[in-house]
Image (cartoon, rainbow, N blue to C red):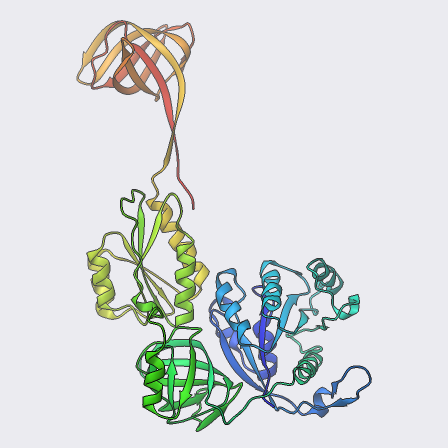
Amino acid sequence: MRPPIVVVMGHIDHGKTKILDWYRKTKVVEQEAGGITQHIGAFEVEIPTPAKVGLARLPDGQGSRPQASGKITFIDTPGHEAFSKMRSRGATVADIAIVVVAADEGVKPQTKEAIQIVRQNNLPYVVAINKIDKPEANPARVKQQLAEEQVLVESYGGKIPSVEISAKNGEHMDELLEILLLMAELENLQANLEKPAEGVVVEAHMDPKRGITTTLLLREGRIARGDTVVIGRSVESTKILEDFLGRPVKEAKASSPIRLVGLSELPLVGDTFRTFANKSQAEFFAASIPQEIKAASAKIATLVEGEEKPIFNIIVKADVAGSKEVLEESLKKLAGDAIGVNILKSEVGSINESDVKVAFATKLVTIIGFKVKVDASARELALRGNIRIVMGEVIYEIIDEVKRQMQEMLPPIITKIDLGKARILKIFKKEGNKQIIGGRAEEGVMRRGAMIEIKRAKETIGSGNIIGLQREKREVEEVGKGAEFGMLAESKTAIQAGDVLEVFQEEIVRRTL
C-alpha cells in the first residue's frame, strides 16, 4: 500500500492552505505574498493514530479498520483564476481531491472550475465547506448551489461526501481527515517499490547558492541518493536528495514529495521523470524523447510581419518555473486588436545585466520580476537607460500594473462632433495666423474654442480654431443659427469672403484593455 496523494482545490481565499496548515501545524498562508498560494506545493503529513481520528467506516456493514498508511501527501494549488493550468496539472497526479467552498461566499468561478477538473480526471473527491465559524456562514445555501452544479452531497441524497469545517479553529477537521482515510482505503492504492521510480515535476527554480532545484512527486517505485534519473530530456544524478522540508534523505518511496538539488538543466513544470540502472540506459532513453520538448527559457515570441498596432515588449524573470509559466499565459491574454504582447525572454532567476542589455537594444521593453532580486549592476544600467522594471510578489498585481502601462501606449480614440456651418461675409483684419472675420451661422452653432475646417468651392483648403466670438459687439461663448457674428480665428490659411466654415469639436477618449 502507498500513501494517498490528495489535491486541495477551490476558489481564491476559501481556505485551502489553511486546511493544510491545521494538519501540518505550519504558517504557510502568512508566508505567502498577499495571503495567496502562487505555486504548487507538495507536502507530506503524518496521520494521527486511529484512536485520535476514529476508524475508517466501510460501507454496507463491513465494519471498520484503520488506514494502513501513516502518511498523506497533499498538493496545495493556487485558487486565483490565473493559475488554471497549474490546478489542472495538480489534479492529474492526485488520487483524491478536496474541493473547498467557503460557507460565507458559496460556489464561485474557480469552484466550478475545480469541479470540472476533478470530473475530467475521474478523481474521487470530498467537499469541504470551510469557514463555518463566520457569522454569515450558510452551509445549506452552499449545498444548494452545489446541487445546481450537479454535485449532490450525501445530505442532499447524493454520493459525494461533505464535511462542514473551520480550518481556523479546527472544528470537524478530524472528520475530514477520517473521510480522506476511508476514501484512500477504498481506492486500494498500491505501488511496486522494486520498479524504477517514476513521477512528475511539481516545481523548479534557480537557487542562487545551490543551483537548479526541483520538487518531484513520486508516483511509482523508489528513488535513492546516487540514482541516475531522466527529467524531461536531461540526464541527472541524484547527488542531493531531500524531503519536502529540505532535510537530507537517503531514499524516498512512492507518493513522497522530494527535492533534487544541483541539476544541470531547469526542467519544465509537468515534466515526467524516471530512474535508470545506469547512465547509458538513461542517455539512450533521453535521446528517444521527441525534440519538440524544449526549455521554456529558450522561447522567444515572434512579431506578425507588417503589424501596425503597438507592441508591448516584455522580459519575464520569475522565482520558479510554475510562476514563470503563469506569468507568460496571463501576459499573453492582455494582447488584443489594439495592442500586441511580445515576450522577448522568459527565464527563472534574478534580473541581471544581460536582461537590461536586451531591453536596451529593443525599444519600449518592460522587465517583469516576480519574487526575484535585481542585481546592483542591472539596476544601475536600467536607471541610466530608462528601462522600466515592474517588481512584485503577487502575480495579479503585476498583471494590473502591466495593463496600466500598456494602456498608456494605446493611441486615444478621437471622435469628431459636428457643431455647425457658417458663411464668411467679410474680412476685417489679418495679423499672422490670427484673422478677424464676420459671418452668418447657417447651421447649428459657432462655439468659442471649437475647431474649424475651411471650405472653398466645396474643397477643404485649411483648418484652424475659434479663439473668440462676438455678437452685436459683445463677447459670447456661442452663436446660434441665423445670427451674424464677429470671429477671431487662428489659421495658417487666409480666409476669404464666401468661404464656408465647418465647425466641430474633438472628443478624446483613452482606451482601456
